[in-house]
Image 1 (cartoon, rainbow over the protein chains, first blue to last red):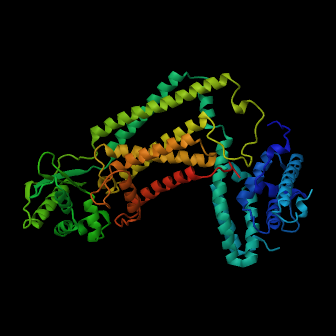
Image 2: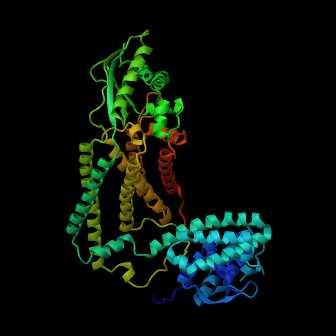
Image 3: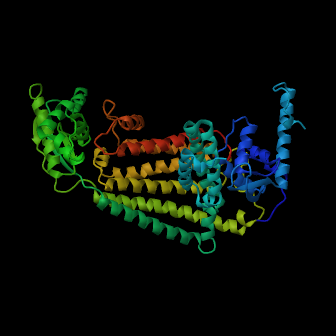
Length: 125
Length: 472
């Protein structure tokens, strides 16, 4: 399938599952378990992805070329099992930034209407 | 760090999850199965560490719904990734066949299939004999008091006496309950289902007709009911037994000539419909191929199944609607085959106990099948997004008509006067579903109604489901 340059906005809005996975990969490569842990941590345990949801999401992100598979290697902090690592692609980085920007704009409007308090650092531009 | 293999509970959980991965499509399983299993193993280890056995229980309570939901979504995604049914058929049809030859080919195939099935089924179905006794009561069958007295013929008092005299609890227990013994209340239900009472038109006579798979038994039962009722009413208003029942020489069900005729008629109808649908597809495929080309050939692919949070789409194209119609047809055939197989398995009482008459069995199968097909169509919309309002109204009207037809033959024994029709049918469905039928080893009748109601629930959900994301 030939690669086609797509604007990040064409992928928006993202579903929460997708957005959290991309956020988890924003700081570097992760394997599935690490992504799951990071999502749970970001959401204070509110979102705990099952294997089916996580790998279904990863599959679709790979198909859309928002992420790339890196290599398989063990995680030194866990055990000796080889794990599949994923990272954001160039398009993926632009998409997650665009989505975060969109959230920030919405949050800015909500803050202007005094619906929410101070923004967290993650959403400030 | 302690691995999952070292923790017995976690190890067992992982093994179980590994087996459940078979629910996913093969391609997905081969690609991501090991990684999913690995992740589950990690989660099991964490769950065990947090709360041991209860932690694993909590994990399974989260993982099971995730597994069921995502396996279904993956199967749907796999279907979507392939060419749509329309495109595949169009690809098959386009280079070779003119619409008229497609119509003829499909007509012949479907017609032969339906007729062959109806013939096979007719000769495989268990036979049922009927015997009729006629009585002349001392009251008019046409006035209101007479109607109430009509019911007394198959009242519990009369039937109880018949059961005791013929020792039916033991005889039917031996026949249907693997040598056990029925309670009288159970036998009464079974017996009532085999009785058909009606006035003889133009006379003051009443016909007591009893069905059984054994010809002499049918005659014995009809005579016993007539005799018992006559003795019961001798003092108040004499009843005369005008005609005694005799064993039938030929089975009344299945009505082979009628079934075959209906098979031919139904086959023609289905073959016409199928042929027309396929001809339309061939025509549209021809037009489309002369235009821009099929979406898969035009390049510039949209990301397939990308979890885009768009609002639910409509049943966009002719392809979706035709797919839905084909689902209905498949649903009709499949349900017909299933119900016929149930009959063939020799389950007593199912078709014999309904008041569906000669032609009704076959039509009933098709009607139920159409209902299931409609529900399948609705379920497909559940995942594809809401169709237009007009489509909904049309399908709802069709469902009401289908349901109404379905209940035409069902007398509602729970209501006085055994009314037929939609309301009676609804009451009957709910009542039969929750009323115990202990004389079946498994509640097949319940199973049938539960599936029926289940599809109805899917339909209602599909109708009421709000606009939603296509895939999340």
